[in-house]
Image 1 (cartoon, rainbow, N blue to C red):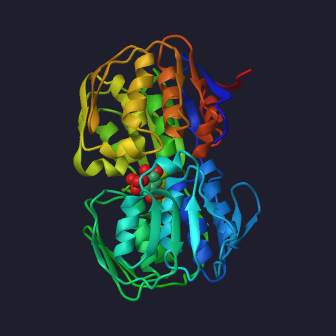
Image 2 (cartoon, rainbow, N blue to C red; image 1 turned 90 degrees about the horizontal axis):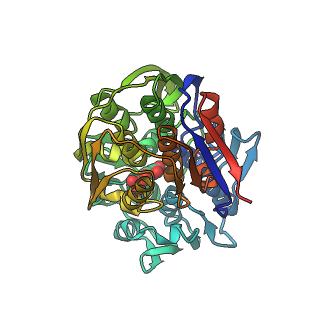
Image 3 (cartoon, rainbow, N blue to C red; image 1 turned 180 degrees about the vertical axis):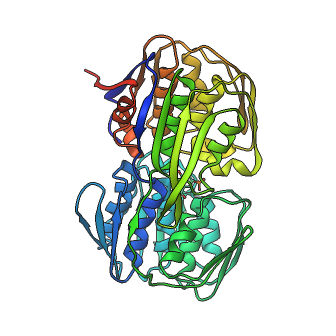
Length: 436
Ligand code: S3P
């Protein structure tokens, strides 16, 4: 990630109005280039997300000899077929999804590989994929359970794996390895995590069935190419949604948003808090339901969040923390300890940065407690090279008194290129400035 030389300058006061959309779904964009590479033939992808994380996956596929034709930033053709032995480590930069899914693919290849990334990625836990992949017969080792990961060829076997962590990345790594195994694999989830891997592999000809919390997949080393149009990312939509809820007199509509139920937990929780959200399904894209979200400013009520919904809103907790500050009464979040092993420890970092804006948050081991509504005052805060932290702090600034400076604006482009422009289009006063 680039040095923190850009910052967001945020001024409160303007209501958000109008209609817009958000960039393509990050989870699906990673998968589209990886799965396209495993297909025999051409996979055309439209509305692909050209962001730091997904470009890292695309770059890694090119290092594996895959030709990816770029028609524009967002439209590409993946020429799939045989992966080739890479002549250097596969660099996934900051992308946790990129490295965990690609490791699932690499353990099934007839050549060795090394997977690595930035200093930030080297701090993220990999034991969660190393152990279950080894149980399938994979020959891989980490560096004290972190990356770089060293993979050697091995015959994989079909297994039954009961997951111990609620993670779509771990589930996906196992399902991808299972494509190359000698027999059926069954993955038993703790609760339903995002299912893009299952939906996309099924559309590409893989026999994969989900019954309750059990996903059963048959080995299928070569996929059928298909065309994808990727819907707008629900996780990115959550930022303008919360902004419109907490900035008075706002009324916005976001179109073409992915409404896959494994991704919409945050909208359900906000609705239960009294948020005026009208969600209308308009069709399907790449196997996922898509639709429109209309949001009007609302007086929110505190709530309790825990259990199965947590994994369905795992990326939205930083922005949800901002919403909770403006809700009347107490909000308690539990069972969200996974937030401590994301790009940053998101519980600690959000608590520390929002405290600089005057917030009063009780951080707990696996969540937080907020008594609201609270009044925030503009200040200088820091995004910690974590896109969702930076973008959440911008929204907090829009509802604070006075100006807010969010140091580290570049990292927003890891998932949401054009974030400031999107908010400005809706009338918010957010600019990207360069630090002299
Ligand atoms: C993702 C899964 C989630 C999520 C990440 C994307 C995916 O991670 O936080 O942003 O695309 O599978 P975990 O599986 O670690 O919860």
